[in-house]
Structure formats: C-alpha cells, structure tokens
Length: 95
Image: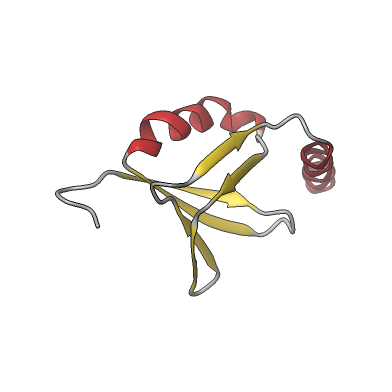
C-alpha cells in the first residue's frame, strides 16, 4: 500500500505478437528504468520485464510493483528475433 502521492509514467510497448500493451511505471522505476528507456526509445529497444501487475480490461495493461525488474536490450537470440521482426514490419509499412 502506498503512502502519500506517487509519480507515474506511462509507455505503450509492442509485445511479441506486435500488439500494443500499456505499461505504467511507478515511483522508483521512473528515475531508473524509465530514464534508461527514454534514452534509447528511438532505437526501439527490446525490454524484458518480470514480476508485473497484469490487468486485462480493454486489452492488457501492465504496471510495475516494488518487486518488478527490467532487462533493456538483452544480448539474447530471442531479442534479436524480435528486433528482426520489428524491422521487417516497419520496412513493409514504408515500402
């Protein structure tokens, strides 16, 4: 339970099925993970997030909780596959 006012920042992410998903970051995640994501957002980073609150109402919405953790641009073959799929999708939209 939160005491006092909280700070939030909202992002729209694209999941592995290339569908939009809302992510709300609370409090301590804004200064750290949100700042890092904001610095690399133009490069369309792959973001893995664990231990989120998931709400299913008019689509899926995600929210951080104190135990959430982030990995931004992991060096993993599945991340490379996601990057390639996104590049192909963006390329087909421009062509």
